[in-house]
Length: 126
Image 1 (cartoon, rainbow, N blue to C red):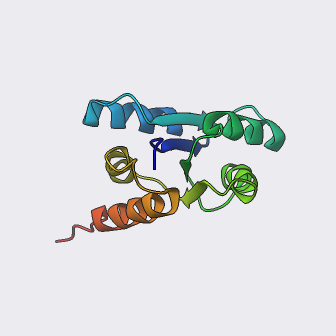
Image 2 (cartoon, rainbow, N blue to C red):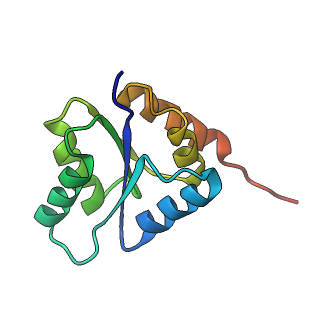
């Protein structure tokens, strides 16, 4: 693939911006991720924000919850763009790993991100 993937993080309120900022501080990289918030907008406006953030680039869209307006807006865009994958659920581990594997096709990068996020989950008990 010639053009590196764009990662778009779509969330409620300021979560997407906070996640992108944290990933930038952890990785030292400031390219590759764009934050989109649903704050103060209708579904149509959120769909427009997602479309603008993705553009015509191949992308993986990371959504904060597996339901709701953020997923609906992202899924609407996904249905008409074959070079976009959508992941419902997001973590810092997924986003950091994504930054270093932007050369993969969108579906493969999305699968890798989900695997990384799953491996990063732990329960600590006594």
